[in-house]
Length: 406
Image (cartoon, rainbow, N blue to C red; front, side, top):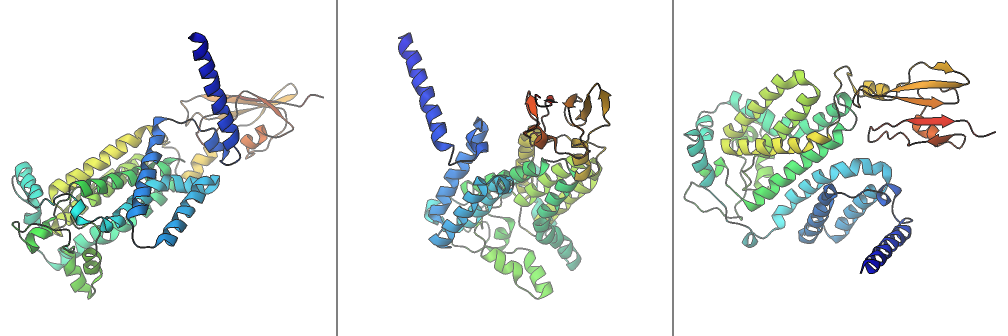
């Protein structure tokens, strides 16, 4: 029995090595030698979701859908564009899912809850706060509510991404991208499973009218903005929304809070401003009759959970670094050399980003500041002992370079 077990393991190992040799020419080295963990199940989930969305989307046609799939396949296969496409994948999945909601037949979707959110509002807060806030309107309030809800909300993710890239440590932008994407993705899935009517439904149809998926969306208080500027931008946008009954959770609230958490993590002094923005958009959501207070709290909960899940993957912030350039200079800094017999020892200082440790790199040739040490360790004129420098994972190991044997 033991012999059979050993032979079975040997055959299994042989088959696995044969499979690796067979697939090596067809996949990149990074994927070929990737150590798979339970963390990678997220991509299986996104793949299943992508196949489902590919199947239900009726417009655009099959050619455009295949073209989009090919673009993402090539982007994920090639090493350079993969750095963008991989963290962007959750955001793309969220956007496609939101767009695809219009193609899900109403007969296959859950019952729409009209009175659940107002009832929760009264139970938790003693009154309907959104009704109280939206009761008295004027032009000044309309503009103050329109700015965060209809303008800043759609531009701030791009500004936040640019700010995190420039002022944050390298590696924080992919973490933000995935957190932002998954939070919105789970939020839309919740809206599909638990569809609820927003406050404008109460004003338009009343609480006793059953909601149906054939009902168009409504701009709520933003209709006054269209009237003020003489346009129908928000009326057309919300009337054709693929997610009419997606009041809970409020992704306006979720986006604002998750951006606040990341920005305040990088720039702690910005916390008062970030908190003020969250309060501002919360007020706007209720004033424009798009969300109840319970929706806003629910969206905030989703954002906090997403940030908590991302916490272990956040690179450490150095308060002495003002921007990305400072992080890069510190990461690749080489201190002055000190003579040691015939060799030159250089101290690679990684104290600011790796547990206050310092590692020596012994190099047998003269190196000017700014030399790519990772490339040097792979040069044919040097032989290295121990492991190489992993600049992507920010994990640095001791490297000793010796001159070639004479």
